[in-house]
Image (cartoon, rainbow over all chains, first blue to last red):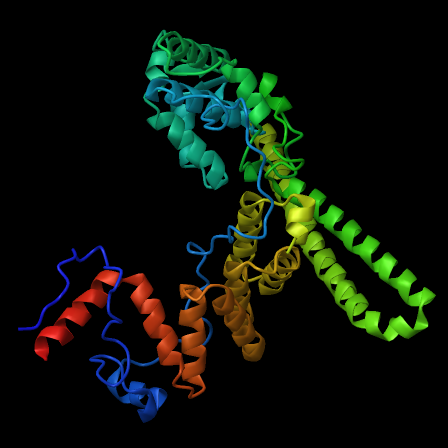
Length: 308
Length: 128
């Protein structure tokens, strides 16, 4: 009798045999030597329209190689580096609550929720369903809605929460961890959150200089550039400067040594081309930034007109 | 090898944001804009298979099939399991009568559904 791996279906064994879709024994796929295209036209539905099968938006994640690694956030909530032992779940929830609240309060249109520095559950629900919000804001709002720490931090159960209340609650949980020996040195949650910066704030592009609330406005970038388009454009200028420096150096070498000039010409040409590509990209991003800023401005102006 | 992205401190998170913006442009039909961003990202980090695959898709849609295939080739060279590059290159090759496109589709299909792949393997095994 034939034997076959007993491994469960969803755990392909290490020696998992190449599956059945290869070669002439394939059930569904015509053998390559029979000319796949012609065969498909007789046995399969009509071909899909021209163009790529997919752009793969959802599946396109940048590689983990070749990009800068953000420095570890030594004192930030949820940090697992250094000497800090395991945090309790309550402490993690509280820290996340404070962090998300910090983020939500940093976005330009936070006044829509009512008083500056206060977030209500109903406003968060509106954020989650607001088509103009960035996915980062929606995700932060949803996390806040789902966070079990909300009701504990919201002492009077009014359905509203201030950054101070959330920060105090997070500090209390950290202190509780420290007292029970399950956590390291305590750091103010609100301070930590501010130092941690606002990550993924795509919504703030071009409009980040708008209304900010309290300490949230001072959020610092993690590694020199915040995770916004503004920050990316700033980085691109640095990249262009770096390429220009390399170009200048190569051009100087070529001028000093004519025999090397032809050898260097290829590199000079490549760098010049790369510089042009980066310039195009920068222009494109700047257009996006100004369009987004204009959109927010139009929304604000419309709101003002409606109020009048 | 140190990339320009590493030199300037561009992180994976920032790259993700830029990729997302490029796809926003694709959604509104601005393929040239998306191409600019993907090309720029590749200057910053030429080792990102996902960006090569996404650029290939844009070039593919623009009808620049030779350049699209080259982008898919590079994506697959960097990451053999790149499903997007495999599916799109497979289709592109089959459309021009190159049956090696089937192999790309098989690899992509296997990646998409290992369970179905195993079912197929078991069927074949017990039918022997």
